[in-house]
Length: 237
Image 1 (cartoon, rainbow, N blue to C red):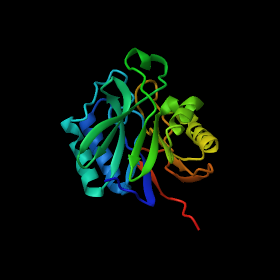
Image 2: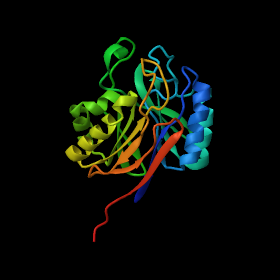
Image 3: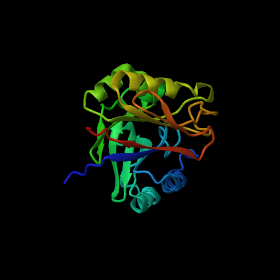
């Protein structure tokens, strides 16, 4: 039986990530999930490995994900964690109290990413009757991605990204464009702290924007921060 909820609490989190250390990163993800207390927690691009293009694929049944599964079971959360996933894709693992599954692969690869990964396809995740479009980093900068995703029918657009510290305004600009073009709210988890690929200094400032493009909640630049907002369905009067 499908579950429909009149409200949905979304968090965007930016834990400190250690290169290639899935076990340690899973613990950091679990801590963020417990702290946020949200139905859905969005994490940055490749948050489980760091932005390391040579990182090994993370299988959905990887035992190192156990702390995330346990945290989700405790809080009732669905976590959207970034990782290289079977495909191979730069993907998103949806983790809940029963385990993990691959729900998305980045569509628009950037630079050398195409040497190791294949492009995915637009996808929507249904959570309690809310249809959530998924995106990873460069996807958010390609208007066609939001168009193709919105065509599937979405309430919100969720993204995990990695940006340099001097690009801290980029994901906000893109979120406002998606909101203006498609009338949906946007939640973007942005990497904080150093990672690979030349991203020695990243932006953080994960944020959530309304369907009108208003910034509703924003984390700071430091690792370990998160932001939370609850969305409610419009009711007929």
